[in-house]
Amino acid sequence: MKSRFLALLLIFSLTALAHHGSSISYHLDKTMTLEGVVTEWHYSNPHPQIYFDVKGKDGAVVHWAAELLPTPLMLKNMNVGWSRTTIKPKDQVIIVCNPSRVETAKACLAKELTVNGKSWPLGAGPGGAPPAAPGARR
Amino acid sequence: MLRLAFLLLLLPQAPQPKFDPHDLSGHWNRTSRFQTFSNVPTGQGNAAGSAEAPFTPAGKAKFDENKPGYGPRAVPPAIGNDPMGTCDPLGIPRLLNTEVISPHQTMEIVQVPGRMIQFFEWHHDWRQVFVDRQLPKADTVDPTWNGTSVGKWEGDVFVVESIGFDERTWLDKFGYPHSENMKLQERYRRIDADTLELTMTITDPEIYTRPWVSDTKLFRLDRAKSSRWDEQIYCVPTEEYQFNQRVRDEAGGRGAGK
Image (cartoon, rainbow over all chains, first blue to last red; front, top):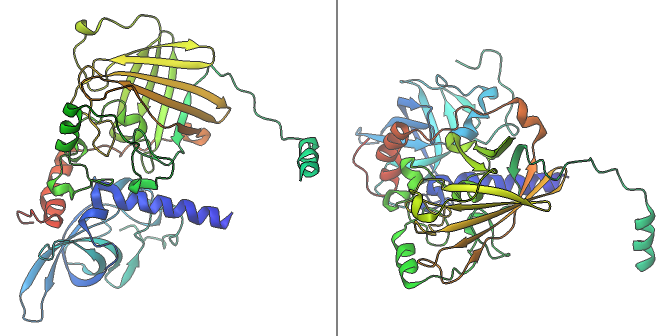
């Protein structure tokens, strides 16, 4: 039963990743970590998006965008706290993401997300994510 | 081994739920993995190869013009032209063989006097199949996104014949084309209480040299689904546009700034 579940999960994940050509646009076998300050959070179709500023070692600020899983999948995660106000401007984020296949592009596919020190599940719900703490939906 | 098989036959079988083979109503989730019109059996998910299409030269040229974001010819969506990227209607048969998939996986069938109606969760689209009339003559039908459809029962198979399709739609997410003169036959069969089978045949001499038959699509009845419906699974043009401009095009190397 467990292996069957894992197989289904894998199929599900591959399907999700392929939405809107993610498997073509991003290096799914590579990750990078970005730390920055949120400027916008769009919890909308077709994929939720985080826009944020990253300050480089030279002090220069670079504006980035990270897309999340398809919104219908994220909606299934609402029971663990995702909402239109999960993230807000000026929040501190750490995003582990797949980089674009275009080296100069400032857009990536989010894999792991930390907001103000709290880790948020990015997998497709339900399942695989801890239940929300009371009052977690901000 | 034969003895074991014989013994297994003697074991009491769990009773199968009764069902009316002429009742197709309910919420159906596609369980067959492939998301294209016609697949090679060994294909895998989105990387599946499609069975070789019997293209005419004009059909091959039209196929080459279509730049999908999926499959062996996939290009970054930023430089593709999949109608889904602009929230254009997906049309029939694409709604049947591509988009009935998680997370927008459900097709609901409703049978009312004179019509069979299909609701598709993705795009909140729907089409109707008339069961009380003949298919009109092709030259009297204007092309529409989902075509003009009539259906009838042949034994326990519900056979839908359709004409009058808008040629801007694709057959599937791999970019297979069709003309306005495509004729589509769908054959639905409820093979048990929880399983619906669908096969399709396209006849379109402008694009394909012979009738092209789909692989078998399977759907499973979702009995719990009748109590819920995911209201937010729209393709919203304004949201898609801003996502394309600020993320998808950027990731594809055509960024205009965020």
